[in-house]
Image 1 (spheres, rainbow, N blue to C red):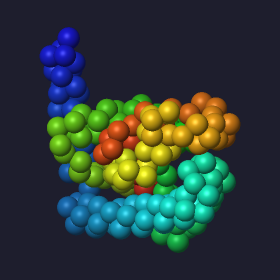
Image 2 (cartoon, helix red, strand yellow):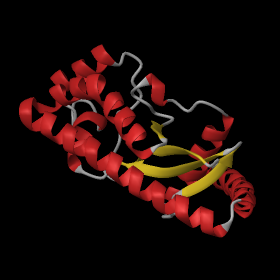
Image 3 (cartoon, rainbow, N blue to C red):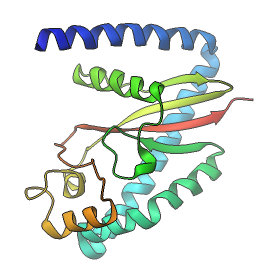
Image 4 (spheres, rainbow, N blue to C red):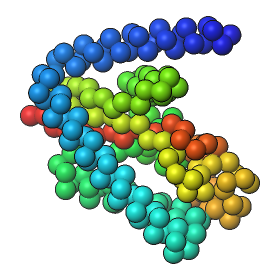
Length: 195
């Protein structure tokens, strides 16, 4: 069964990489390189701003307060960064907490599967694809620090009961727990208008 699953994932990955490679060919190498660099800068900045704010919220009143902070403030922080960078910044995940971060279409589901397979094999590179007239940058997000597990780890082990209660109250359909350290958790998605 494991061999069949690995073969199936390899087949999808090979076909998907071919599709992604074909899309790279449509984008000139200069433009591809420019937008990859810009995507790395924007996603790095967005991640830094979110982590800094969540860290401050945790220091102020613990992980339960950080969950409430994220519920109220994370979207507005991302919206402000989107405006400042003239793009649309979002995060997507198959195991989302915020319903607005769910995978929205078959392309995102396919990309999710590609990244999951790549990361399993140690490849965590970002990519740029063309969607209509827009260029869209994707970069994996991992649970990179032990502090991430206080809200995204295992309830009862990493996540304290009060924090888990805050998560269930604010996100009744939460899927974003049960992670281990350095596990693939989501994708930064940055949409650029290439006109």
